[in-house]
Length: 621
Picture 1 (tube, rainbow, N blue to C red):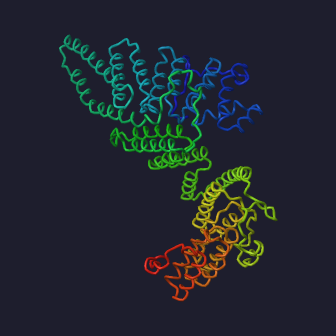
Picture 2: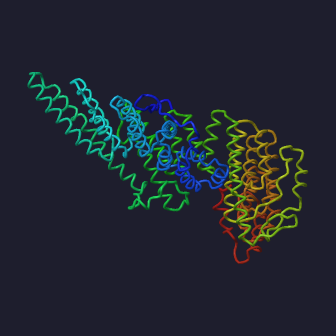
């Protein structure tokens, strides 16, 4: 890490590391890692178990504790494993890795404790001072970093001096640190302000005695008073912001258990259930993050780097605490991109996708960003990976549905199909494929295995179809219609593809294909009808499309073809849609015939007030 200070021992040379394998040098030294490995199994049981069986458990621990999803307690526990003199160099490498992007104050405290442990001589005080500055530049804006500020002040105060010049340098250094600290909303900011006042007053008394002996002007006394006067508004602002900050953070960080024995040894972000309480928590986080972005400390343009550092630390902490909530990752991505750090923003998205492998928001944002950079290979890989992940989840859900629901029956071909749903077409899929084989974009056979129906499965399948829709839109937008058709051909082979994908593809052909797009769109709808003829919403969309393109003959034929395949109750939306069309654009005789048919289907009352259609639906499509 380029901006991290090298940690040296008192002789100025790196501490020696044992030549043997640090993992196998002593059996009892593996124990802390084993404890962490057990906890990590909650994150990924399969990977953890395999790693342990193959003897790579420690490698997995090292990999996992380097990730932002692990809180500082795990990293500290692992580092403690290597804090014996023979392993200091290895500990230093771990510090460099863990601290690279860590916003966790506890880990930085542990780092500073280590630095002071290995640098105890007066000659090494400069190295310790650099370590404090390094830490405070990273997490000094965190309200919980007040203890580090206080420790740094005490460290500077304890420095020995032998000349007046050295004493003055020491006082100047103390003043600068105090002045930085009291402008930050730290938990102990009031205590630090009080200490600063005492410090300045004590310097005034020393200066008075010194000046009276030498009969020199009281410039130093005047400067000290001016310092306090100039600092007072910033300090008052910090106090005010601290109170606001505490109100924001209260719901986000619940207090730890009263007894230390009840605290879990290692914090892992819990898997979300998305209940009302968790949704409220996400809302609170989003409110807090927007508040931080609003610059409540009113940093001026010259201090913009400090503002960016502060917000960056807040977002890093947010994605640790809210690892499994895509909205938080997305906000971090948007903000990071807004300050011109495009590569870092993309890395945030990649980390977010790793934490949330089924997140539509993060994958779509990443695909869009890479499309803008013309990294088309990345876009394709992103869509393919998301589809693969969602497909596995759908298949797992299907297995649960099949095992828990006895309402499904197998048809003659071995398919799992909803019992009692009619086959709306006598033409086989292969026959239909052959009928449209003159267009190569429809020559690929659709999967002939239909998933079972359940409300949850249908909802998830619809969501899955959205990925294919975004995929084909990207293919047409970034490439051409040929590429779009190739992606759609892949979608048609997928048994989980929903009817929405067929509609999207049909509309894409109609609007973007200027040479016969209408005919191709109609054939796509017909292809979809073979698989989704029992989906009333798809039939309605197809009917609406034919009406919208003024193809009344095929619209009427479609209506007459599908209306017998639905029960009267399920057919209500179709009757309503066709009645609106006939009453708005048909002749009187056709409208009266339709009214008579509807009365026969619904003898106890029409599904809609037909007599009002002429007057109230004249603007409907």
